[in-house]
Image (cartoon, rainbow over all chains, first blue to last red):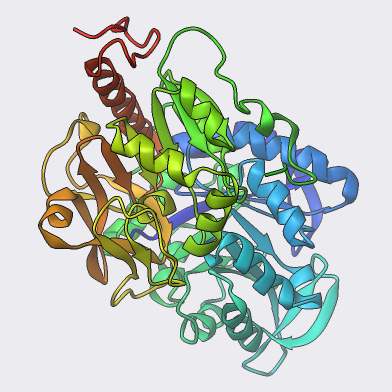
Length: 259
Length: 249
């Protein structure tokens, strides 16, 4: 049976892992490949790297980090942040990423999703959706550029469209919950998982193991991503998986990875 | 085939040449799209020497051949054809040398793919078909590999161990010989074939290079199996180093 995945997320800026709250107030959390190796050894099912500065200068630093990580951690790696073309995606894949996540550039040019899926296959194309709840309405708006720019797009509609265009997986982040440790936005997740067939990764708001259970059980998520609670050792991956297993969710046993 | 602009510096390191003097020489076929760093690193970690094959030349010096790959069958076959690799791969397999297909590299062993109607290598009878009754598609994540029979590539790996998958299609063997090649199955919706083995040909639908400790164990087993197979072929074709078995027993 397919396991529900637990995915530590490493936000990278200037070659370091950082973590903010609601996408700002960044704090240094360590060396990316070192943290990646720690998580792989602790039983992470996959890793996500997001280049949150996504500047031209940071690109070569990121590729180096991706390659160092791919050479030390034998688990899947998704990389996102600032990928604007199929050629840029190719460079990231060749550095050792298995999947690339598209965000702002896909909103600006949805055909980018189709072009990347055609060239590399849907399974390599993750579309990341940052969503903000609209006050007094059961709806969410897509925001881009690291949360700085609202788009007017409905998040559920955009999710459906992205999958039609060839996205093989969605990474759905609640901007309202990001870094707040107030739990995942399970309504947002359920709204999306009930209209798409591709796997959905829940992100934004993890506080403790019970939130991971809720993201899967109530939100319908296939995988759950978190950053600060793992970086700061508030909870281990093993804690989270124990809680998921106790709730009857299928998880992969945490075991060491001989690198 | 030219290296794409922006290709990362060290990803080209193993290009076409086997370095060092000991260890099984594994040629890994590159057809331009996916992540080769992981497979190169994983094989190196288990003691093999790796050269990336972008044309047929590298195969002359190799002891074992690995065809990895993700994505669709038609563009992959096109790239293999352009690189002049289709006939060398068929010949490699026909002459009994150790072969491992990973993910798309396994699907290409069959006669055709339903994904885009591509005609593929035709080493095994059957075709790649879309996963039936799958609750999510693509099938992404860790899932159990249930062995139908034993094989030395599973030595030291628990029955039903989890491996990492990322795909929407899988090879469906046909006929008596196709059926006999089935090594393991995995369930996502209906069960599908997740590993095959027939004589010198191995194929896995999952990614051992991304499957943690058990993945590395499987690749180490593959290297041992390939070394023994190559050694058994005698002086005409013997691995250098790799346990000092050159020349065969």
